[in-house]
Image 1 (cartoon, one colour):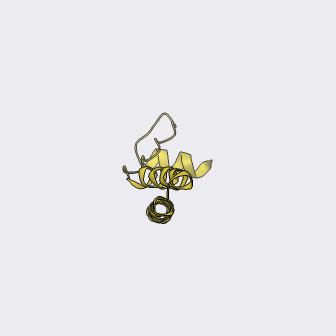
Image 2: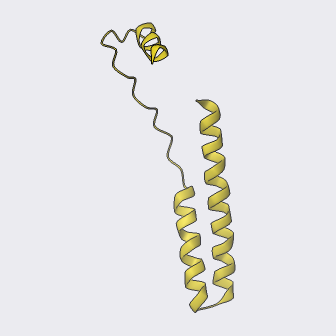
Length: 76
């Protein structure tokens, strides 16, 4: 708590208000993950090819999203 007040004082925030959170940049990975899940489910009732494509999108979405999160945490 004392560190936050020191940071606020150093930045010119005299009211002691907390600084706003930094918003992460937009990313395509949640959409990729949703597409992968959709294709996986659709492939269950249609074709294994759809399931395979869904699995690829699913893995790409998860790996990409976690990579973005890892980079974001390192920048903070």
